[in-house]
Amino acid sequence: MTTRDGSHGTGSGRPAWKLLAITAALAALFAVGVTALLVNIFQRQQEARDPFFRVVELTDETVDPAVWGKNFPSQYDSYRRTVDQQRTRFGGSEAVPRTPTAADPRSVVSQSRLEEDPRLKTMWAGYAFATDFREERGHAYMLDDQTYTERQQVVKQPGTCIHCHGSVYVPYKKLGGGDLIKGFEAMNKMPFGEARKLVEHPVACIDCHDPSTMQLRVTRPGFLEGIKLVKAKAGIENYDVNTMATRQEMRTYVCGQCHVEYYFKGPEKRLTYPWRDGIKGDEILAYYDKEGFSDWTHAETGAKTLKAQHPEFEMYSQGIHARSGVACADCHMPYQREGALKVTDHHVRSPLLNVNRACQTCHKWSEAELTARAQIIQERVFGLRNRAMDALMALIADTKAAREKGASEAQLDEPRRQQRAAQFLLDFVEAENSVGFHAPAEAERLLAVSIDLARQGQIALLRAGAPAPPVSKMPPAVVASSK
Ligand code: HEC
Ligand code: HEC
Ligand code: HEC
Ligand code: HEC
Ligand code: HEC
Image (cartoon, rainbow, N blue to C red):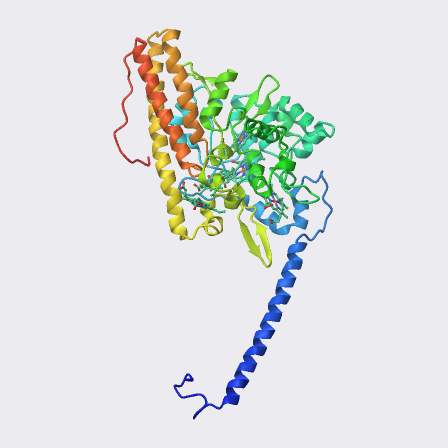
């Protein structure tokens, strides 16, 4: 054999005993290393077996997250970081300073979406959303932003609103004499101001966790009832999400409690998720048509219109990640290592602010490449969304002009119905906060249908011989546009 200096080991230079000594030393070192590793693994297993160091007793009435935080300081710390505001290309949010007033004590809000795109005011003409609509921000703000939005001033909002903006689990149970659903029904019927006094915290630990086992649970009546409808349509009767869902499904369902399309049903203002006939945008539209439901009458055209809101759960469900079993929490609450523990990051935010942990656990591409892939999807969807918005504006302008020139109700009927449909499908993508990322092809499909319906509405107006000539101008024929 040849030693490193080029001489032969057993001949001249290095004697054999030296080699033996080195080998023995290496073996000893190796043994020490293995032992240390075993001890370390053992310690880690111990930690992993009982990761919860309980300092205080938690009950099914402990609402205050600071109390839970004594047992789970790491999760509590990250939970509190949802106050951070940082913008991404299409998401996140911007901290906009404002002067506090008696009516609205907030000193920071997020940017106005109405100022960013004034076409939204025309889309929602006559509805509260046309007065104030802002970019959503972290969970820490949910109760304040709802309490002080100007939409509270223009419309008397019901207690139903708080279902998704506060920690209602304990207040519902108290109000219902121990019965969650009874309390939910009672709060729905209250005026917002009265209900608001019963709720103290934004979404809190108790809303997603069982205090004795820390297992995930769904506490929101809207989702308990909504997911039953979804499963019934798939042939599963009497679905109980808290006993029948897998752990991975729960990592999505806890978010589906609130990040969904909803409406207030009947005079008792019951919060309802419109999922009986399916959860795709056009299936939900067909459901509202069957129920004869509309949110308001459009101020410029008289159409019976609908407002879509944050259908993240529904859209995500149509995408490749859902189909591959990836949950909301995988991207929005990824694990971070703390010693032996994998701790769930409770700083719920845009995954594009956290690509390393949110995406690279599964994808081998660089951060820059993963961000680019997400943004390419968003740019395409946003470009199409803008075309759909222009088409809708054209239909609204034509219908309004025809109406002012005295078109009959019969002549306006079909254009109005097309407006209702085109507008809802566009809003379904517009109100979905990932700008297409959660389900690119589905978002594009809905926008394509929306554009078609808006143009069909204009054609219907012409064919009905409505008195005003069309006034709309066609958008420039740009192939790719991100504006
Ligand atoms: C595969 C990863 C992934 C999954 C799974 C996922 N999201 Fe997202 N989500 C994203 C990305 C990427 C964005 C775009 C963020 C941006 O533009 O800054 C986003 C955006 C959002 C936003 C807007 C955030 C912002 O900062 O504007 C919300 C709200 C949201 N998702 C909720 C959900 C919910 C609820 C689920 C499950 C039903 C879910 N997401 C599933 C990756 C994911
Ligand atoms: C089904 C759950 C749910 C209900 C019910 C609900 N919200 Fe929200 N709300 C959300 C979610 C999720 C967001 C964040 C995503 C977004 O802004 O699109 C949000 C965001 C908001 C915001 C901040 C962004 C904006 O629109 O300016 C305000 C204000 C708000 N809601 C007011 C209300 C009011 C008023 C009601 C009652 C009429 C209500 N919410 C009912 C789930 C809900
Ligand atoms: C919106 C829902 C939600 C809220 C609110 C929430 N969590 Fe969690 N939490 C989760 C999810 C999702 C997981 C991952 C669970 C899993 O994979 O089984 C988790 C996991 C945990 C775990 C298990 C260990 C770990 O880190 O994975 C602990 C402990 C925990 N949360 C504590 C808290 C505390 C304390 C609060 C309040 C300060 C809180 N959570 C608020 C959704 C939530
Ligand atoms: C109790 C209802 C509720 C639950 C449960 C809930 N959210 Fe939210 N979420 C909201 C509301 C309301 C807002 C908007 C708050 C505001 O703008 O003031 C929001 C905002 C967000 C944002 C925007 C954050 C930012 O910084 O821009 C993301 C991302 C998000 N939620 C994801 C999730 C995920 C993922 C889950 C499940 C782990 C979840 N949410 C569970 C109601 C909820
Ligand atoms: C838990 C694993 C997991 C996480 C986390 C995850 N992905 Fe994925 N992603 C997948 C799987 C699985 C697919 C489907 C393709 C496949 O099977 O290889 C996919 C597909 C994609 C695609 C192709 C989409 C399409 O429509 O064809 C993109 C782009 C993507 N992911 C980006 C991201 C980004 C950005 C993040 C972080 C915000 C992320 N992914 C987080 C597992 C994951």
